[in-house]
Image 1 (cartoon, rainbow, N blue to C red):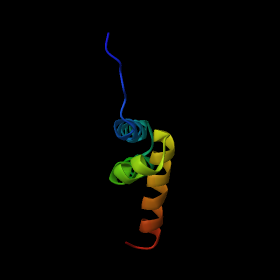
Image 2: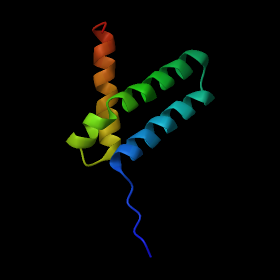
Image 3: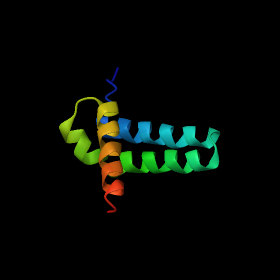
Image 4: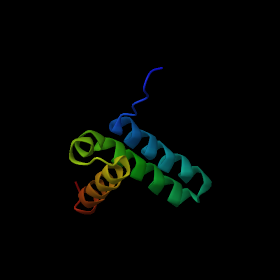
Length: 74
């Protein structure tokens, strides 16, 4: 029997895909926002992987960083 080890980085990717998929059930403007949020989580997933043990925490912080960059016009 082999052990199953889920990579935290892959878990962040899975969480981001779930966020994007959930947007499919929303209104158009919310759908776009959910897709962008998932994209932001994926963009910084590697950095979050090194900083956090919890994949959800890494995804949330990654998305918040992306939102802050967007708010500053980057």
